[in-house]
Image 1: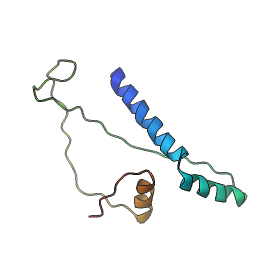
Image 2 (image 1 turned 90 degrees about the horizontal axis):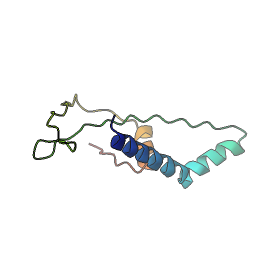
Image 3 (image 1 turned 135 degrees about the vertical axis):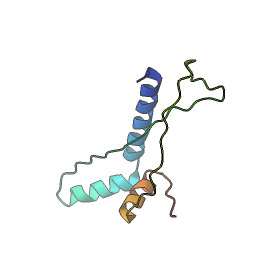
Image 4 (image 1 turned 90 degrees about the vertical axis):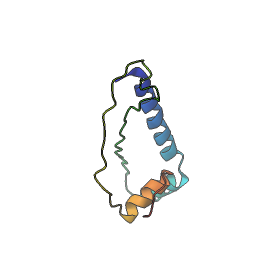
Length: 97
C-alpha cells in the first residue's frame, strides 16, 4: 500500500478516535456504567473501503494509466435503530430511505 494512503488512513483513524474521546455523551454513558460498579471495555470495529479513482486524463497520481478496480453495489443494507444512533453519534449521516 502506498505511503500516502497509509498516512491518510492513520489520519482517519485518529479523527474517529478523537471524536469518540471528545464525545460528552459517550463519556457520560461510560461514567454511568462505572458508577454502577462495572469496568468498561469499548472495542469498535470499522470497515472502510478504498477505491482509487482515475483522474480525467486517465492517469493516476503516479502517472500510470492502470485502470482502477470496479466495484458493484449488491443492494441496500438494513440498519437497526441502534446502528443508526451509533452512526449519528459519530456524526455520520444516515439516509432514512
